Length: 300
Ligand code: GRG
Image (tube, rainbow, N blue to C red; front, side, top):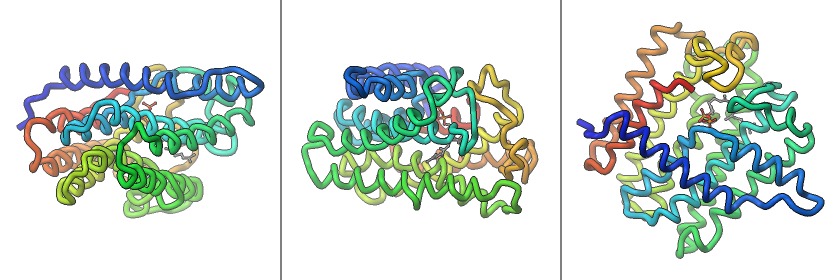
């Protein structure tokens, strides 16, 4: 039984949000010189809000293994750069064509399309520069494993591959197995990296790293089902982006296949199952247990 309450989770998330924002601001280039519009757009995209849920997962998984907060925050910042790049590109007219993200105009609306493409590109590459930096970990083998795992999670066999399947699946029949695989790649892979990053930094035993992977697998799917439910039931002003997008695009989602009630049950079941995967950790993992509940109860 977890001793952490939703209020404890909220307080910890606020603290990590503030710490990772300081780290991100220090790592992002200052807008100067002829490239200034690019750097402005990167800062606008990254520093304009976001729950920092992936940063939280990195920092809390790292805490399990006594990793220094500075190392964890650098990896957390890198993950948020990759995540933000994916949102910037996903919002482009050639993809989801969205005007609103995190409650403010999307990057291509605020700047222009070319700047949004370049800002996404530069955020992705900055992430690897951060992770590979000596300050992230003294051991090169740890830095290389972080780079390898992050690249695998973000690339064609991870998030980008999931996005391709998602685009191809519009107006086509896709079953539960197909949706699950798509979402594991599109959303789940980066969430899994975020949870495993602490184990990599802390040079954890394979069984502990595996437990975090299993936790992330189930919690990531639960997080995605909650996202599908918010698209159907949420209010744009609270969610911070347009809703009903999936229905309008004719996309098959967990909710369109299962219906609202069964999708909610499935999310609850996955969230509980995720928590069970943490059984080999003591109370230090309580905030991760609470994060699994947050994944399905969040309002944005
Ligand atoms: C374009 C390469 C490329 C990939 C796009 C992740 C993704 C793939 C697209 C995002 C679209 C989307 C709404 C996905 C559903 C789940 C998800 C990733 C939601 C956004 O994550 P949150 O809720 O966002 O953590 P914040 O703003 O809080 O960081």
